[in-house]
Amino acid sequence: MSVKSRLFGIFLHKWYPEVNHHCPNAPTILVGTKLDLRDDKDTIEKLKEKKLSPITYPQGLALAKELGSVKYLECSALTQKGLKMVFDEAIRAVLCPKPTKKTKKGCVLL
Image 1 (spheres, one colour):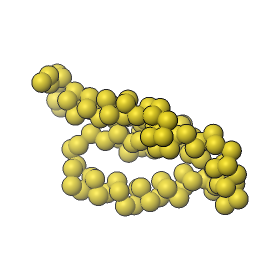
Image 2: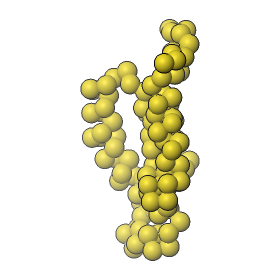
Image 3: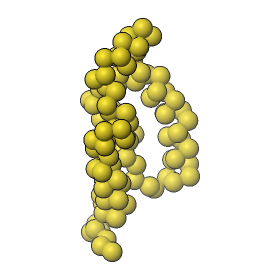
């Protein structure tokens, strides 16, 4: 069992329906956090004791595609790695949404 199955289950059954219900047309970005812990030996050892493993980038990307998210990103608040990109992409997703098949509008500039 990986952390993936447990956390993805929580996300899929609680948070994703909540966001979809209240903001059905909002673009979503799935963000994997605590990236710094993926290669941390102590964290990996603790997960192994529980028969778990960290979520990999391909696993996160696959879930983002399954959910129809516009992006999958990873970041670490501790090291700041990828953090600016998360905010940049969130802004871009709102200001320059990818057109749907019905809509042929361009990017809105403010």
